[in-house]
Each structure stands twice: as C-alpha cells, then as structure tokens.
Length: 149
Image 1 (cartoon, rainbow, N blue to C red):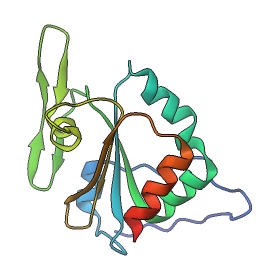
Image 2 (cartoon, rainbow, N blue to C red; image 1 turned 180 degrees about the vertical axis):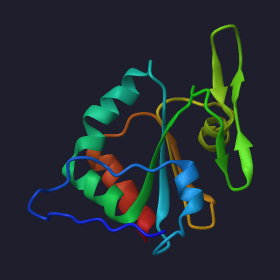
Image 3 (cartoon, rainbow, N blue to C red; image 1 turned 30 degrees about the horizontal axis):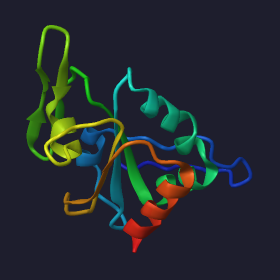
C-alpha cells in the first residue's frame, strides 16, 4: 500500500518525519536511505536539550527528513518491538529500572549505554555510526553529511 505526501515548499520544515521500527520493517527501503536512531530517556536532560535545539534546527530537519528514516527510541519503553523477524523486549535491571533490548543492542559503545545515543544504520542494517552524548546542530550536520558519502 503506497502513501502520497504533498509538501508545501513555502511552509518549510518544522518537524522531523518519524517512523517506527515496525513501520521501517514493513516498507521497502527506498533510495538506499540510512536509518537514524535517536535513543533517549525521559529523564535525560541532554536528550531533552537535543530535542529542543539540535533536532529543531532547520538544516538538521531537512537532512533527516530528506535523506534518512528517523526513529526515536525510548530506551526505557516497555513496549515490545518487532524488527527484522525478532521481538525485542524491555528487560528490568532493578525494581523500577530497566532498558529495552533494542536500545542496548544499538546504542552500547564500549560496553556502556549512555544517553542520548545516536546510531546510523545503512540499508543492510549495519551500524555505520554510533555516538553517545549531546551534539549541537553544526556537529550533527557534519556527521550526517559524512554518512551520506
């Protein structure tokens, strides 16, 4: 089933077009677009800052909307995610704490998962970029352009 989207070029970009892992799994990947995964938590102040600043920057919004599939993943979500024939689940680590398996698998760098975690997957589902920590718009723009080459 196809989807037609009408864009008003005069309106500009105000928000990144987000999709889910389930949706990504069900669509045919077009134009060899990479997947940009923003792994965050509700309590992470740097995650919130990045959402309020970097991910609202007009250049970043255009880059992510035009050249990437953008997925925002709550690392503490208790919702199962079906992706690539596997079901990823929330795994408790204590009484009121835990982490989602998919966030851990994608965002772990040197044995640690820090937030925000940024991951770029290529069309073959291979990790081509990982970073944990806040990036401003200029830093993220350089990285996104590099992954497009």
